[in-house]
Amino acid sequence: MDALSRLSEFISRVCQVIGSLSLVCIIMVTLTDVVTRYLFKITQGASSFTVKGSVELVSYLMLFALLAAFVAFVERSQIIVDVFTQKMPHKIKALLMGVFMMVFAVVSFVFVLGLHELMHDSIEYGNVTQDLRISMTPIYGFGAFLCFLLMIRSFIESLNIFRTGEFHNAEEAG
Image (cartoon, rainbow, N blue to C red; front, top):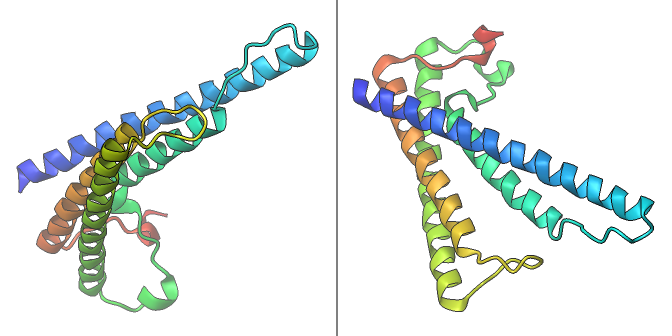
């Protein structure tokens, strides 16, 4: 079980890096787009360099950032409503959290299957993005990879909760 916990921590750190890089790329694309539009405006069209497809780039980078963040912090992702859990014993809360994590693993598996199918359809039919004409295959493939990591982390965290009865409790963490 120690090896699984280390694997879960490693996946979390990798996804923190992926999410951080995605956010930095979002900022850079947005900044470049704003600067080039401003240059276009002040030069009255003499500077024709603009960022094509910036909205599309930002939307796919945001997808990767959100998926990576969810993978990195899945064990902290549950918001427990005090009204329902206030009087519950810790063991019942732990059981519920373990079940939630297992459900995340199952839902993530469904996402992996769906994105994998979309990836294969993209290969077969040559689907591309609307503005930049980038193949959708790597986008679907990377999304499937992140969902696969989410499935693994959710399953490992579920096993840890069932084994130890301990989970991240936002009520106690403040």
